[in-house]
Length: 264
Image 1 (cartoon, rainbow, N blue to C red):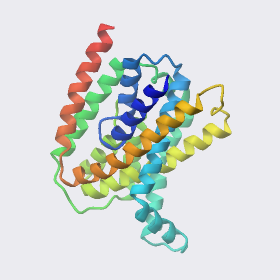
Image 2: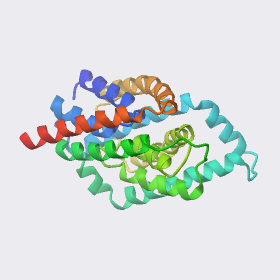
Image 3: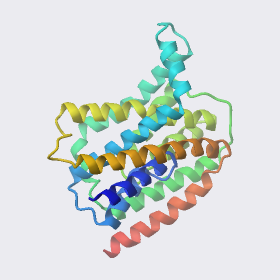
């Protein structure tokens, strides 16, 4: 993978991380188009680091929310910030369990099988369509909701299933307010991304033998900058309830991906 390809994939990651169209699915399609020959482990590592860049952009966009959460937690009281943080922890459990128990199986999906990615994009399209038809409410995410949304996040570890699309759609279908659903969806993934990077470092996966740091750095910067733009834009789009357009997009791209994958 050269520098130009890394930047292109970084931009794809930055924009598609927050839009409900599956960043991992688009990255796999992008790699297939660009002829990326990375083995699944290296390909997945590049994907994870780009997710790390967008996790940082999430912290920048939601810096006030993050600061309020940290300030509330440091008071060591059973306040709204502590309750919200507990919901975040609950939502992480399914993805952590699945990630630890089936890590090798998940890595195998990141090998350029765009027909599979296309099928998962169609699943995302169905979720978005159903969520778009749901009425908006003022309901907050409950503890039970947090766990169910967490299951959706775990399923979204498959390329083609949009993490934000699956979690926001699940939350909305459970009757939660769309703006609150989007906020919860974006914040719940941040600890998982940092945890994954920490695990890779401790496990020795981030070595000079596995990746090209200069190329990875360019992808990281591209993903971070485009992520800032996309996150801000997505918050506005969710409030306006425009998920149907993303459903149509995922359906079209999914059909194309399946067709190309089967043809090749």
